[in-house]
Length: 342
Image (cartoon, rainbow, N blue to C red; front, side, top):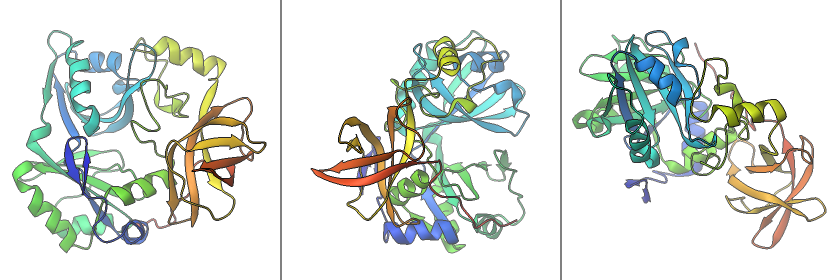
């Protein structure tokens, strides 16, 4: 167990390798009760959220969700989050645990009259079931409730909510229950065949897919365009916080971008903040994330590097406590899941 955003979180239950492979080949369940849940409702909610967030909330129908960003005036990422439309003037936001208080304060300080913003994080427990067998696990626990389509959200009898997104590249869902029901729901998913998984497997799974981690790969000093996530920014919808900076970067290209890097041979596991060097030994940047990939059997990581001098195929070195390991820039993602059902 380790401290994480004010919570005690499991790094692993058995081993990172076992849990990683369970998600890639079957199903794993992650406790995500630390995540934050906000409700936004009232007349004008859509227009207000569209000024607060980078993606286009107006494109959402009832029961649909999208990945988005809360940006500062410089276009930097305060948080990346999922926003779902529950009804015409009601939205459900799932935010990162470490940014919960900051997100709420930022939004509340800019809230339009008539728009209600509620922090319901303490009311919910959350579980993410991921893997090719996730739908089968769900049907065993809730045989009478159909999962929503990808990026959808639906109510569950008993006061729960189920969302169909994920952070591993595999099929999966997030189930939010009343907090008092959380332990029972977690056990039910385990009994239905999902292996308990901790932060270690979460990190190896998401990094194989090049999904960013807030605070590492995303920060208030980096924009979505620099992170290679400009697709989730809608410049056509009208004005929003940070738009001018992001629009200029999209038009001109950023000076640096977040690149995917993998070892070309065996080596000590790469970690965040290890220096990234050119083949000639010049320091170009540092890793924002790094792990030994269980699926690939080699070190992988991401780093912000000069866009002009780096491209797919560029040879690099990773400095691991004074030892240099050869690496190369590769196309994202590192891994493409093959286990698809349904």
